[in-house]
Image 1 (cartoon, rainbow, N blue to C red):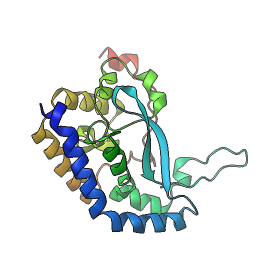
Image 2: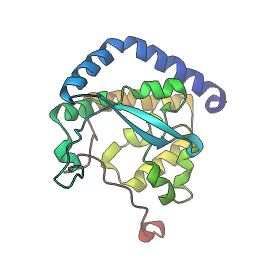
Image 3: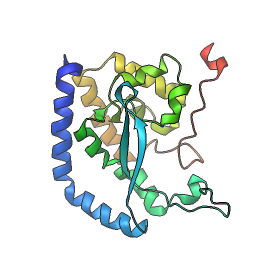
Image 4: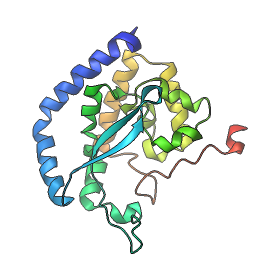
Length: 207
């Protein structure tokens, strides 16, 4: 009942209220981001949502577009600015996703939306993460975020989908706030971003 009829109206109301309340913060970040990034402060990218429907994710940019002499983008750690690190450590880069939630592309709680190119790499259980709208935060985020392995993340995603409740969502939201305040689990050790998913190795599948 909650997942089918109540979750979406709550998402709409909360995201609308958050956008109104946080509009001064968003305006300041847009202005600062325009200066720091020397142009467009927003990062948009296609991501798969519910039932693998593709939508355009909106975030604040944290990396420059710097390229090497061959025209290829520099490594993430080279392009990640001090301002970008601050946005990530405080999760402020995620605020524009409230627009995605308002539109119905995302939910406040659910599996995080990942790259389109990962779709062909999931096994049957991992594909279940697309049975619901992706979320601003989720069970994997409060259990370790980017410090978890991909397999641990996906298992948390499926566990969440199999047990969606109002109390569960409320716990994830409040725990997420605490994690953000403590700045826990932002990135993998020695990596600016999460290592790319390349499929689950056979030895793990057969373990």
